Image (cartoon, rainbow, N blue to C red):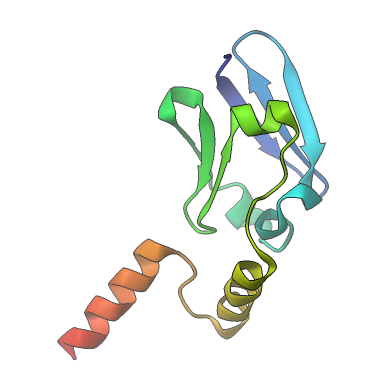
Amino acid sequence: MPDERAVAVSDETLTAELSDGHTLTVPLDWFPRLIHATPAERNDWRLIGRGAGIHWPDLDEDISIEGLIAGRRSAGSRESLKRWLDAKQAGRPRTLDALRLDNDERRRK
């Protein structure tokens, strides 16, 4: 399985350049959290698993190269997306790590 070397996210597409020279471009609407993200949030990504996937820490979104090749869309439920969007609009933490930090800070007070 090739791994990812570079990623580009536009308002409409997610593009991954692979180690075997291929480029994959998929519609961004396959991944609702990316659609609802700001450009800064979309561009704050990291390769994970030695290039086997992409992680967006501010969005709590992970996409695998295997999933992109297979044409798999986001597996998140509508309920999960709704909770995430509600938290985003309310300015509350949206990732598990951020929620843990927020809870720890509340306990200290």
